[in-house]
Structure formats: structure tokens, C-alpha cells
Length: 75
Image (cartoon, rainbow, N blue to C red):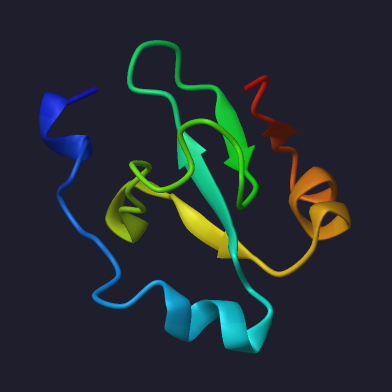
């Protein structure tokens, strides 16, 4: 998996997604390929970048993220 995954695409204004309720970041681990979602307020939330071309995405609810096979970030 290429190192350029990190920071390759970012949402210009993440707060615009918060208003729509889709504030959960679905990120794919560059090291393991594991699908992990990050909630606002978690340790690495604001530094997590979403790159849709690599399968990363936004979720509106935790249930939606879990149903898609993603797990919650540990921190």
C-alpha cells in the first residue's frame, strides 16, 4: 500500500460535513489494510485524512460503519 495514502486527499472544510451528520471518518490502515473508523473527539480524528480513491469514506452513523465492516479506532 502506497505511503502517499496519508494526506493525499483531504476535505477542504470538515465542518461542512458535521452539519450533514456525516462526521465519522472511515480510514484504511496503511500498515495492515484494516478498516477503522474514527469518531470526532478521538485522539487521531483531526489528523486522519480520507482518500476515496483508496476505498476510504465518510459514515453518518457508527451503525453504518460497523455494518460496512469497519471497526472503531481504539484511541
